[in-house]
Length: 307
Ligand code: GDP
Image (cartoon, rainbow, N blue to C red; front, side):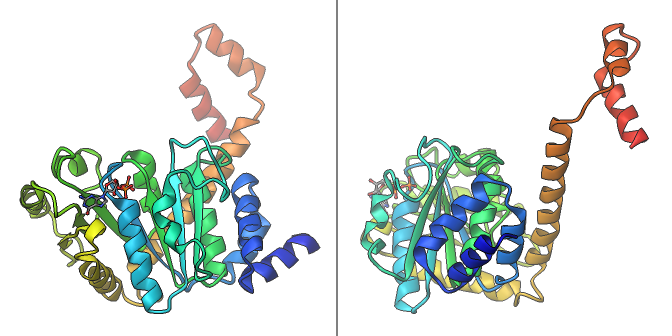
C-alpha cells in the first residue's frame, strides 16, 4: 500500500466524509486489494440490513423511515442505493433517491448510489467493497437498498446480515417475490402500502408461501406497513432487532461465517477470472479444436489438469 492510501485509510477511520467517497471510488473502480485489506482490518462493527423488492413497492420511503428510527437511537447510518439500471455512478447523482433527502444534511447519515457504470467487477463486488469502507468508517448500521428484482439483487443480498423483502398490493401480489427467487432469501417480509386495498391478500399469499419452509429455527415474520403514513415502522425495526438477536454476536454468527467463506470464494473467482481473461491458449489446442480433434471444453479440462 502506498503512503497515499495509508493516509486515506486513516481519514476514513477518523470518519472524514470526503475521504469516504474517495475510498469507495478507489475500491470499486480499481481492484485495489491493498486498500481493501487495510480497511477490512478496521471493520467488524457494522450491521448490514438489505431491502429488496420490485420497483415502486416503497423501499426508498421505507428506508427513509428506518433511517429516522436509527437516528432516534443515535446510530450512525449509511445507505447504499444499488441501481442496476441507472447510467449514473458515484455519490454525485442520487437520481430519484430524493425521498432520502430529509436526511442528506444530517451528518449522521451517509447516502451513496451505486450503478453499473464504474462497477467493473459487477454491482455486488462494488457493493461489497463499499461495505468494507463504511464498516471501517464505523457506521453502526448500513442499509443496502436495491432497485428491482433479479439475480443481481439476490447476489447483493448475499452480503447483508438481514434481508428485508418489500412487497405491496398491486404488484402481482406475493407471487412476484416467489418468481424472483427472493422468497428464499427474505428474513423479514414487509407488506407495504397497507393503506391500499389488497394488502390482506398479499399477507395471505405470503403466509401460505412461507409456511413451506422454516430456515434454521427462524420463521420470517410478515410486517404490514404504510411507509407513507409512517405506520408499522417500529414493528419492522423490532423484527430487524429480533433477527439480529437470534443471529448472535459477531463470534457466534453463523451467517457471518458463511459470508466470510463466500467472500473468499468470490475473491478466488475474481482472481481466476482476471488470470483466465489474459491467458495465452497454446496454438496446438486452438488448431486441434479447428480440426475437430477435440472441443473447447476438453481443451479447458486439459489445461486445468496440466496446471
Ligand atoms: P421503491 O421504488 O421501491 O424505492 O419505491 P418508492 O419508495 O420510490 O415508492 C414508490 C411510490 O409509492 C412513491 O410514489 C411513494 O410515495 C409511494 N409509496 C411508498 N410507500 C407507500 C405507502 O405505504 N402507501 C402508499 N399509498 N404509497 C406509498
